Length: 210
Image (cartoon, rainbow, N blue to C red; front, top):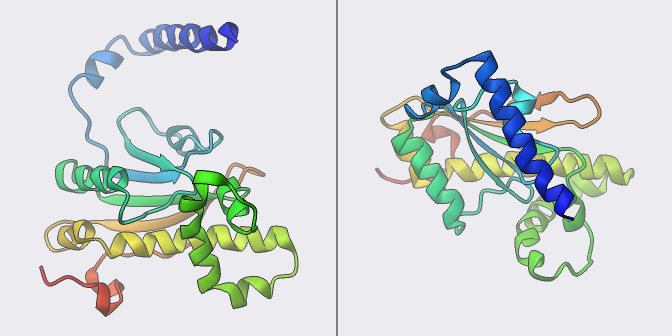
């Protein structure tokens, strides 16, 4: 148990030494602040690290992660991150990135009791219910799950567009919202082409008079 814990600290030391060899000013530059152009809303799954799979450096992506990359309007953690990214950092792109083989999505497709997590999975079940005709027409359960992963990402992109934060930003700055899905089988990201960049992309009932 202690060995697994110490591995992280020794790994950090090795990483720090390697960074300094590559660039003696690496950490000095980090202290000057962050200016990311992207906000990443991804899954908490340990196999989907934003910087690694996009081959980006520290400071290039502002990151928020939760189970199944959800955008829930009552999640003050997510909404605070969104506000800071848009209003303070002035990111130009918000990316919702799901992944095939998502445990949260798979769990939401069943009727099993997952304790406290039921409250979170309820949001994914709502997406399933909304698209149940399409989903239940897919006989293969794995393919059905993969499609729900995609539909869930699309739903979260739309949820971002429904927020006052994003709509207010569209009035004064460039901001695009995108939906992606990452695949473990090949390490590639699929762009779902559901980009939103103006209030007209939002259903009328959800538009604010700002």
